Length: 307
Image (cartoon, rainbow, N blue to C red):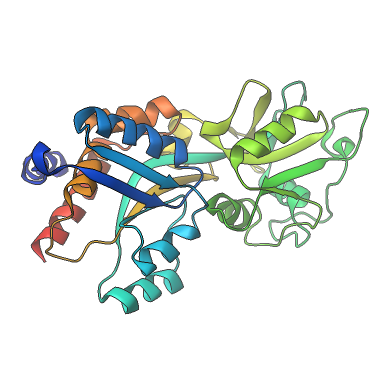
């Protein structure tokens, strides 16, 4: 049924006339989505040469602020809006933001490429990064020897994202059971900086968006503490959500119900949910939406049109 609806709804929405698709397309939000947004912007310019994407990738927390202020119509986020953000938007505009899922992603725990560590349990991960130990560990892990790894520099050097990022929030909720980070975790403004820091120091560990990984680091599998089964941060484990640090990526849209979006924004969303747009998702290193998931997003757009 969803596939049939996808076939019916897509032609009805794809009405962006080339003559009216012109101007600057603004977006403010997630650093994780920056590369994907830019590639979508390039693809859109190929279709509509008079459109240019202007992106401010300052972190997911900046998207609701810009949407509420009305300085942008599109807010890419690597986490869902929280209730306070939704309420503030609704109070300002008189209607809720339109939420569209656009891709799937995962956070990878990474170590230096020569590090022999292969997997971690959730309690071990929490014991490394938090001081609250809410995931079942009884003591913090501060040295590689506690993980069975022999390195000349024995202390684990930790790297992560800053508080403005959805990546930081997801890791705290899923990787630390909602706990608090240790004070010695080095914070970085982007996932690429985390990966570079880990690549430069053999005794380091960090977490970053999957699409930012390089051959200089190694992604660590999640190990089920009961069964011992390994779930790598890739492929079907991410698509199915079996990997605990998997997540959806979103575009939030300031769109009054029943009022069509301007041409550039409308054409951009049509591209994002198209076969070509989802091929870009896979090319960048994220997991594309299934056809059923895309059909649900098209229905959200259609429902918004009909209100």
